[in-house]
Image (tube, rainbow, N blue to C red; front, side, top):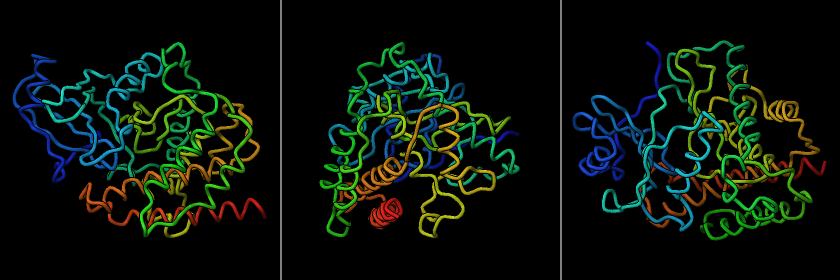
Length: 355
């Protein structure tokens, strides 16, 4: 029997009202049979993802996290609109079935999409999936290819001109993430000021180009074919997609790319199986991306440091919510240590760039 990514029990405090969900979905599809069983997929530092299983159909429901949220964050309507517009141009996007902005159902916006049944490579490959070194390499290349394909989508033809401002993306990112870090900093977090100053001073003169970028492209956001587990059949989590510089997108992805020879702290932070024999190193990913796209990259240092800094801001924003009692998920308790480690990683790259 093929391996399929499975959901599990709903975390305490993140339950859904089953009667509200059932009522909404049966208005959407009166053919649904029975009372749904609702379970939750792992993860959840950002938007929450649930499997809603009826006797005759499985659906996915996405909603924002519990607790206080930044005004512009977790825009369910935006994510659903991106996916709906992109589906015809990038077939790995799940089909969105409905968006709901009526808070009387769940107390928040949410959307419902099709379930793509397959494997999701999270921190480790699914138990029972044993890939050879050659197959692991092919999986790695196939995942990178999906990022490259996304960067080649005709976003104007997809009707996504209003998704972002395009030119000047780098400048907006450095300014915006710096502001967000200062707002999210807690008294036990490092200040990142020298890193932010370095980024502002070493920003390339202009964006490399403007294209559609995912902004959270990782192994645990792809779905693999259970019969052919090196083949990517889905790409998930479009919350942060926008128009921007593809090299920034690549740098953001490489912030999560923990390889086998990294230090023990970074290896403990690993969220995807990029340490396995056969996986490309970060340097090899860059070289492969350049070879496939023909895009000139004189020096990726800026993009790598920005990716690590941006990850630190995201981690610190989550920790800020925990620190101030706006969320009680115990998994977030130690996130400030990740923030502090990522500053050291940025400073090391800066020092190496001067050598």
